[in-house]
Length: 261
Image: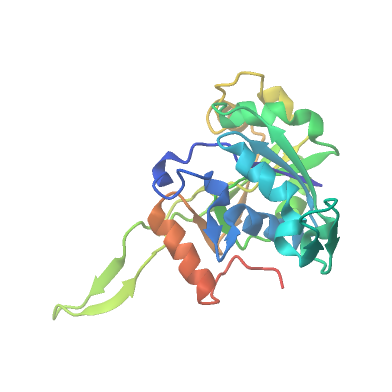
């Protein structure tokens, strides 16, 4: 099964951290968040990716075209033929990555429509290039297939943007929770699975088609949008603060989304 990843947005809320590179390439522990997302899928056996490029897509393209040179020890002659001898292997050697230009200003629905000819098989996954989680991808896929629905979306509990403080009657803090989960209600965490034969009935070729509006709303009205509840870790990276949070977790060896060895 293939995995499509939306990598083309402007990332306007985190632009101070990403003026020179697209948001999916912002590093966590020295590797782009996009790599972390792909490693999560690969750990479940999904290693065939289609990347929807847009804003500063050449940065993503260059990263993968030169991936082996960047991660392996190698020897080359600077003054002779550009033959490179690689000395080390790397875990991603069995990945297949399609780099698709979907337009710099295209919206999410339009981006998905523009890669439809690269998607094979009866089902495919879709997610965004700016969020990590410890979702059981195989369980998500199994639930989607059993449902017989056109689409399944992963629902996560919203995370508070500010610290939650529980104070006792004397004015002392009893509990401080830096990122408290919402007590009720869920939001979309991305991590979709689609029926590759029927999802296109809900999309079209408009560049301004926002997938999260018309297509998903129509899927819900048609009773064709299922939900997979995820109560584990999930975190998007919309702001410099969230970028710093993810790096801090990784650097302390406490990254919950690292489900691979």
